[in-house]
Amino acid sequence: VYLAESGGGSVQRGESLRLSCVASGSVHNIADMGWYRQAPGKGRELVARLNSDSTTHYANSVKGRFTISRDNAKNAVYLQMNNLKPEDTAVYYCWSLVRPNIEGSHDVWGPGTLVTVSS
Image: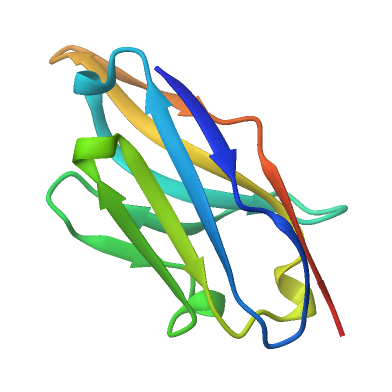
């Protein structure tokens, strides 16, 4: 499985961006998908996750502002980010949990896309 993000950029406080991630390869093995981010000097953190059972999980800092969605027909996951804040500035990584068989699973990461929010 390979992941490719797009949609990052530079915006002002309060503006919106939509990140996209398209999966290729053995996409039938993908279970869960989501988005993580890493701000300068900080560790990578979960932003939003969409599980295979359609349940979602959001970081407290983005609840009410970000929405994760998935289009299985396009093998894609999206992150709609509204009311962006300077503290949302980070490299955003697409993530998937891949289960090639019932015996195991592994994480797959995209290369990342930079989001910069200025005040």
